[in-house]
Image (cartoon, rainbow, N blue to C red; front, side, top):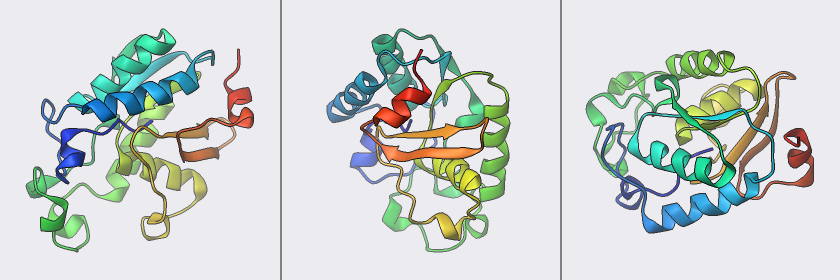
Length: 184
């Protein structure tokens, strides 16, 4: 699950700052809507990035579905290097590594490492790019091939890790097929 709308999103700022940019009122509403979709499904826990917006998202989801939240630095926001805190339109249109940002492969390694540490069904609350990286890897896509994958705010991407398949990408409404995968 991606976090809900934060003040960074409203202001078009990219940020990996731990304690800045909380959720907006709209972001909390988005998360409550998504959390309602998860009610009654079987999960073993919630794991979140250590950034404020994801911690707030995970706490809200945890309260709705009755699960404990654990933080995991491996599912944090993409490393933004010297562009942390910049507006999106201020970042040059160059490759991430040329900008001193965390590479695609580095994000893939840490996201794959994170999911390998949890046995069972977990809700991971992270950020758009790390979710896209992980999703693309299960689809066999590289960075360029995955540009069209849109991970919306407060959306859910379901991955059946055991069978190495993506079940949904960036949805806010769970279908009956998805619900069956996580039913008690």
